[in-house]
Length: 415
Image 1: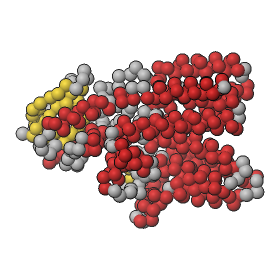
Image 2: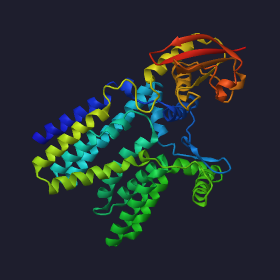
Image 3: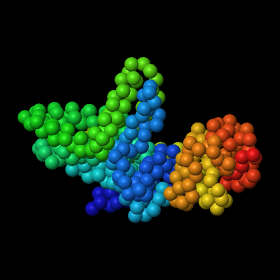
Image 4: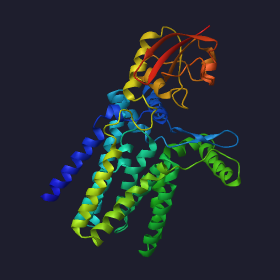
C-alpha cells in the first residue's frame, strides 16, 4: 500500500512539473515546425508520406541529403486531424509518451529486479531535468527515450524464453529508433549483440532472423520509398558515411543530446547498484539530494523556453502570427533576425496551419514587396545584412509593433 502511494505521488508530481506552464515553456522552433509541417501536409492532402524530415545539415559532396523515418509523423497527423494544428496539442502527445516511459520503467525494474530499485529508477527518471526538457517539445530525437524503454522491456520479454512474436516486436522497435535518428544505431548494435549471444546460448541462433524481420518492418515506409526511388535514401546515407570517413567535410556531427536515450539504461543500472549496495536510508538521502539539485533544472520559473531565442515562446509566435494575419492584405514574406534561423519556420507554420494565411514560399524573397521581420528592439532590420532582408531592399519601415520588452515586429515595404 505504501509503495502504491509513493508511486502515485511521484507520478502526480512528475505530471505537474511537465505540464506546469507548458504553453509558456514548450519549445517550438525550426525542427518542431518542420515536423508539424510534414504531418500537417499529410492531413491537408490526404496522402501518406513515406519519408520524414530531411537531415538538413547532413549532405554529401553532391549536395544530396537523406531523410529520417516517417513513422513518427503518422500519430502526429492523426492528432492534427482530430484536434487541429495547434503545436500545444501535439506537444502534449510527446509529454504523455515521456510519462508513459516513466511508468514503464518503474514496472520493468520492479518485475525483473526489486521494489527498491523500481522506486529509485522512478525517481531518477521523473525528476531528471533532461527528461523534463525532452517532454516539452516535438522532436524525433526525443522519441528515442520511450523507444529505448520499450527496447529494454522487450529484451527481457522476448528472450526469457525466446519468443518469435516478441522478437519481431523487439526488432520493430529497434527499427523505429534507428529510423527516428541514426544515433540509435548504437542501441541497435548493442541489442543485436545481446540477442545473438543469448540466442546462441539457448541453441536458437536462427531466431535472430525474427529480429531482423522486425527491423525491416520498423523501417518499412522508408524501404518502400527506396524501392520506388532506386534506393536513393540508402545510397545517399552510405555515400555520406563513406565521405565522412574518407575526409571531405559533410556537416556531420553527433551531439550529446543524440545519445540522451542512454540515460534510460543508466537509470536502471544506477537503481540496481544503489538498491543492492547501499542501505535504504542512504539511498533515500542520495535521492533527496538528487531531487533538490534538479529543481533549478526544471526551469519552472523561466520566462522563455530553452531552445528558443530570448523573448519568444509559443505565445509570442501566436501573437505575431495574429498581427500579421490581420495586417497583411497582399502576398508577403516573413523573416527573423533573432538568431540564425532567419526564415522563421515556426512563424510560417502558424501563419499557414493555424491562422490560415500563409506567407510566400521561402525561396520567393526577391519577389516579395512586403516583409515582416521579427527582431530585438535594438536591432534595425534595414541595416542587417542577410539574404532574406537584402532581397527586399531598398525598403522602408512602414510600421512596427512592440511584442514585449525584448522583441518587436517590423513591416518592411519595398521602395
